[in-house]
Length: 333
Image (cartoon, rainbow, N blue to C red):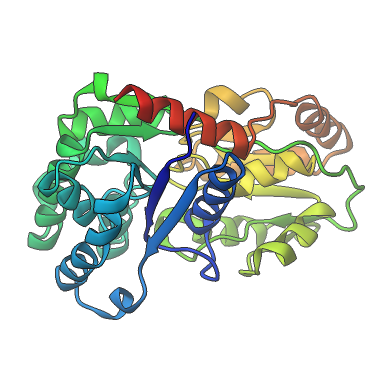
């Protein structure tokens, strides 16, 4: 493939922390290894502007890059997705979105404190949307119906979005998330379960705290740490636990697999079909089931079984492979 000029539009990028920032950086690096020139446009001053104004500001900011780029990849459906797709429509450019999480669902759960599963959200909650949420839904629907092509990391999320937003399924593809090679297999230094994640209602952390208060022989680690520090913590942890109400491709679980850490994971997860043999899965709405899974993993036999499961998982999907799949998909649209 001849060298191309590629634009990546992303809401966050290092030194900002988070999965989307790391995704954008690794994708950029892999594109450059293939000989392409890459421009990254991300939020700066937009972080301090009100919604709507920030979208307009970003729209004008990216126009020169849109005009000069051969390929345009957008790593978001609303914050940068809306202005980037609009710019591409105005100037007759093809655009490709790679979805992340679900901005609307996350915001709704935080606003209402209602623990609704992502899988059921659009079927049960649309009539309760606030005026702002109705606008976000309409603009996201416009974006997803007007982008040239959309990449999902899982069929699970694609099924939800195609139905909710009236998307043309033929204009969608799957590119799985990064699955790195195994990096270690240390014995645990304690009976500590790592549950470090954003302190949001849909992460279900209140349930975890309540359960671990009844299990004094185990500890729960929930602090937020920089990525490198979190990996150091995870390497020698007893296990990793995620009980959220809906996660697409949770990096914490993928990291736990890479380090051969046994894990307990929500069944409401997009990568279930890929990793179902690698861990223990629970219903996030069932407190007794979560507690039972934790207590089982604290037994000698339970821990041995969980360790064997994660050790036996050896699927690898590199950033270089992801970059090639992105480029191949773009060439077909």
